[in-house]
Length: 399
Image (cartoon, rainbow, N blue to C red):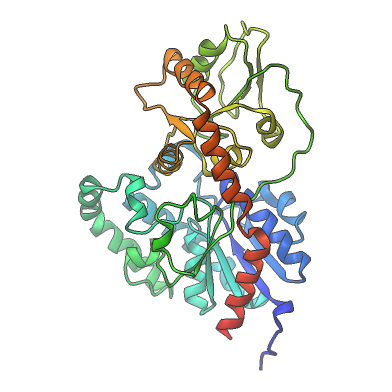
């Protein structure tokens, strides 16, 4: 008979996808849990091993089952193509079934935490009858907040067309003991699902429509590692992310800001854009300490990944919003709605458009004031301590 554990002996299995934007926000919470004496076994991918193990977790490699979520084609299709998304969920779950069948009974977790896109973690919790918590690194979405993702009649029509393929995929899961009844049960969270959300209630759209099972802890912001020198009165930081970066957008940014007095720092990510005729005010880097750059920035041109926007607003930096995916569009809409930035549509991203937007957010103090207000809400959130207590309570209530 299994010995009843105390809260101080809590064992957690954590599942995540191979994406920096979904992994990095969780690391501070992992450290908070392991520092408190809890055991965390983290199912992830080799490129994240060092980060995860440095926080005290036991790392379990999922390489060989890579979802390619962070590849351009896969990343663009997830969220747009429901049949593709369901197939991806099923393929990854079935591929990892043997690993989970072996490891889950061995570690005997009290709780499974899974990223909102690591559906195989949620399915493992269902299969093994283990309490489940969703780790949500973007906004929480319900029928109210979904409007930020442009879910309309076109999406509904696409879903209806995809239903035969979806039912076929769900049958494959059921045959392996994953008794999921519908795709909605698989992909959606509801007010009965314990969920950690890495933003504030103030920044979350329609926060009052979510139950107290949603724990809004604010963004996870790491400390500045090495300060960056501010060399001008105004500093503009540009980053289009590490994955879906746009060469043309970088070129337009350089053209827009080359004849200004601004200090411009451009983080290239993985794009193959090259610049041979740069003015002295523009510095191009393959990567930067984003916290250090944001600490001195006065405007941030961003692709609107949830982490980047949260970090910019935490440092009270107004935003020029250039979303590329539905998820990023949702983040951009909320930031613009709250007055903290200007969004550029796909047809409004020329050098002239970018220059005008930068001058707008630098010249109008209301953008800075709105960013500061959001920052205050972030800093007043409960952070990882509140999240740890939430998880401990979840375990206690499930016993």
